[in-house]
Each structure stands twice: as structure tokens, then as C-alpha cells.
Length: 153
Image (tube, rainbow, N blue to C red):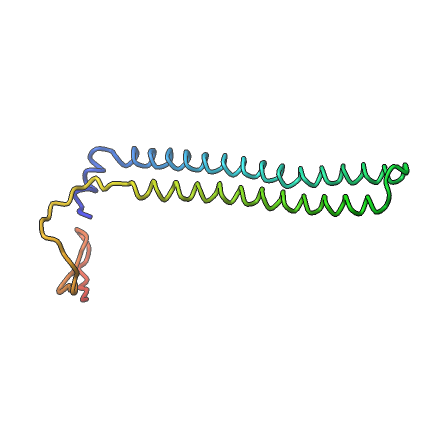
């Protein structure tokens, strides 16, 4: 980076504007992520708890029917086994749906990144097929007013 850019930042007081913009973008991104996480947590809790509540209510209903003599113990065993299978299938379905949603968000982020175009136009006309090597000789850097310390590469 050329030190001229740093001078531009100081001359035009762009430092504060850049920091404010960064803070605003970070807050916006963090807010969206927080809201999405909150919604996902609530949905996950509801989808995990709802089938269990339904299974318990139906199990209690069947148990009362057995106690009243309207159903047998075999009926209770059959229905509770079916309910546990149904609950497992619903649970697997909801978790799969959540993974699909997460993967769609990841794909959208990748597509957004791939659609990013560089604003700086390349001006070179010669195409490099491959780089054989890059060599630096007698390279040094010193800040203005600092003591010179030679660095050899």
C-alpha cells in the first residue's frame, strides 16, 4: 500500500467515516445473523417439542381408554409403537428440512461471492501462463524518521 493513501485518509478525515461505515455494516450483519439464529432456535424448539407433546397426549388418551375397558393392553402397545415410529419419522423430516434451509443459505452466500466483480480494471495486455519464480534482491523499507535496519531476503 502506498503511503499516499494514508495521507488521503488523514487529509479528507475519511478515517472516522470508514470506521463509522464499518461499525454500521457490522451491526447490520450481526443483527441479521442474530435474528436468523433466534428464529431458527424458536422453530427448532417448536418442531422438536410438538411431536413429543402429541405422542404423550395420544399415549395418555390410549391409556385412559385401556383403563375404561374400551381398548386392550395390546392396543396400547400397538399404538404407542406406531406413535414412536411416527415421531421418529417426523423428527427426521424436520431436521432434514432445517439442513436443506441452511444449505440453501450457504449456496446463496457462495453465489453472491461468485457474482462479485472486481472494480479495478486490469490494464495489462500480456497474459501470463505461469510464473516461474519471483525474486527479491536488496529490498528494504523504512518509515520516514525511523532508523534504517537493513533486511536481506
